Length: 250
Image (tube, rainbow, N blue to C red; front, side, top):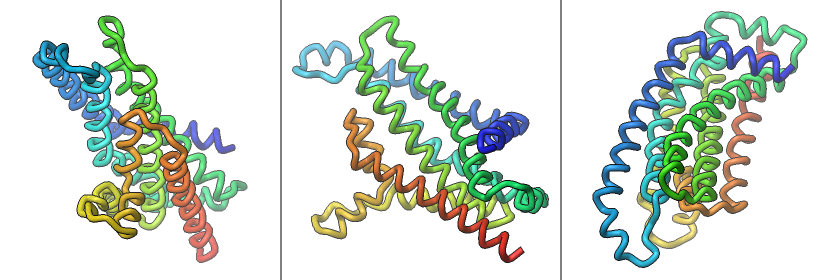
């Protein structure tokens, strides 16, 4: 039943012009960033030959592309998540879902999984840009795949927070603004934590960017993966609890 809901949610996203507009905006901006990075690489290529252990194409083109993508999707993901539950509430279809022979866990996981299918398409389209350079140069596939995985799991974390915010209100715009503000806070929470100490370490661990940037450097460790898994699980569980409370109150 979860897969049935996920397929329905995935198809409904492509029935809305919003999903197509978001895909077009992402590809347009990232294509410009991609070609700009290639131009910069050609300009400094002669200087790189004189450096020992000089950065390669993956470091100078693929990794910056993923960094730009993360910032753009930080702004656009709330637009994808804002209607997941709030629109169902506003239209009255959520009451039908809650009265159906489905558990709330199945409803929430189905909607979340459907969104992840869409996120996979976004990440795949982004990865295809630097992957196309393999026809003319050598790429560090391990680092590029690590960066792609980091981008995907971070977008999954964005989506779980947006899902929860969408369950709190009937207004999709409020859900989108709340999600963006929350994600931006977690993205920048360690900006002023340069001083040493337990407080700085805590802020650094809570920051989404801290764990994402490590993967951009090709460092894949259990600490970062555990952070994202706990983040995703926590907000999915909170969403389920929120809907269960609303079902009891209704």
